[in-house]
Structure formats: structure tokens, C-alpha cells
Amino acid sequence: MNKFALTVECKSQPGVVAAIATYLAENNCNITDSAQFDDMENGGFFMRVSFTCSSDLDLAKLQAEFADVASSKNMKFTFHDETQKMKVAIFVSRFGHCLNDILYRWRIGALPIDIVAVISNHDDYRDLVESRNIPFHLIPVTKETKADAEAQQIAIIERTGAELIVLARYMQVLSDEMCTKMSGRIINIHHSFLPSFKGANPYKQAYARGVKLIGATSHYVTSDLDEGPIIEQDIVRVTHAQSPSDYVALGRDVESQVLARAIHAHIHHRAFISGNKTIVFPASPDSYASERMG
Image (cartoon, rainbow, N blue to C red; front, side, top):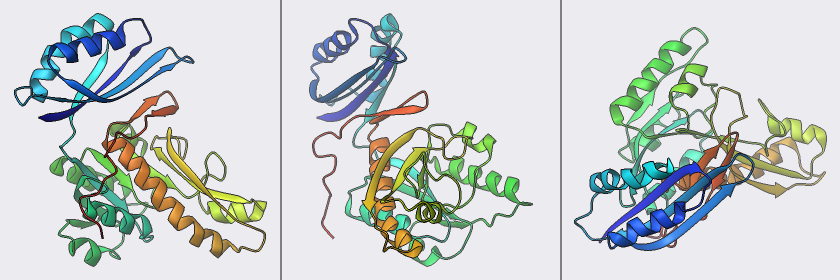
């Protein structure tokens, strides 16, 4: 049996769910998980369906045959092979906690991805990355070399076929051109509970304000710094007794978990961008299961 997921976006209207279910039933497909949402604010409809089917149905056939059904409702749709691992490039600077967490989850199968490159503007994590047989690319960035550095990064992304770029505490602002070129394909982790405390040193800002909660936010990257559609967030409590250094230390775990959950949502095609927001459907059964422990 083949395992696929179908994602659909269109205008909210009667008959969309029925059309999808009818097509799958007529092709002897068994729906194993389904989620849908009508965005009343902008009139959009979003749906994700997981299903199994016989081995004679492949992606190309599904995509071609469903086109007529989709055109009747003006659906934007894609079929995904749920056994195919998404190719991911990771960008990192000198904070390694998110990178280490991703590598661990990748190694045990909790994040079923194909890491095709790790790109950094520092050499700190070369040994760690290469010990996992993952290509490491050192591309220093200065104000004068930024354009050339991004050209090198884009060349690596295109050569490796990376479908998702993860900024795992990559401390460089991407250009408007790169953000536009890869819209919806770049995920960042920001060490703050956005929209509060944007930009540099958010923990220091939070400490100065005497907050009782600090958090982390993973979002899609846009040309507006720290303004992209939010995918995942979480928090940890702090008190007056904690120092700014404590905030940083406590934040590491939250950042790692939030980024991992955002990556999980994206690679399983559960996150949909709707204006400046996202619709993130719950995970399908068994999608968190690891291939091995430890």
C-alpha cells in the first residue's frame, strides 16, 4: 500500500469535502486522517487528508487525475508521498543548541528529513556536522560580502535540491531578495514570544521589562524582520530572581522544542500560510514515532 497526503486550498464553498472524498473513494483509497478549516476572516478553505491506496496509484497519476475535480472548485492542491523525506538545509551561527537538537531528532527518526547541507558563517560546528556525514559549508558574511555569500548559499540550496531552509539560530538577516525567492520555504526560530521583543537581545529586553514569562517563536521568514507568519510558540516561567544569563539558559530548551515542532509541521505538510497567519493542523497518528530510541 502507498501512503499519501493531499493538501488543498481554495475559496470556502459547498461541496469541496464531498468532491475530495468521492474522488478518493472511487479510486479505492482509504482516508486515515483528515483535517479542515474555514477561515471566516478571508473566506479561505484549507484541508489536509492522509490516505492509503493500492500500489498502482502513484503521485503523477493522482496529480493528473484529480486536476479535473480540482478545477471545478478552483482548488490549489498537491499530493505528497508520506514516505518521502523532505530535503532540508540548516543555517547556523555560534549557538548550537537548536542544531544539536535537530541532529539528534534526525538520527533517531523523530524528524524524518534528509539533511543535505549545514551552512554557517563560523567554523564552530564543522566537526560535529561532518561526523554525521553531512556536508558542512563555511560561508563567512560581512557587510561587504553579504551579496556574494547569499549567492553561494542559494547555489548550494539549488544544487542539493533543498526544499526547506531552517535558520537554527543563524544570526544574519537575510536579504529581501532571498526571502522573496524562497517564500514559504524558510523557517526561523526567534528567542522571544513574538510579537514582543523583536530584533537583537530579546532576553535582555525581557529582563529589563521584568516579565514573568519568556518564550520562543518559530515563524516563516519574510522581508519584514520577525514579522513572518507564526508556526509554533511556547513559554517558560521566570521570576525576579533570574538573571539575563538565566533567561538565555532557560530559553535554549524552549527554542529547540519550538523549532523542532515547527519543522515537523512543515515537513508533514500540516502548515498553511493564510495572509500573515498560519493554519497548523494536528499531527497524524504515528507521525511522531521514532525509528529507534537513543
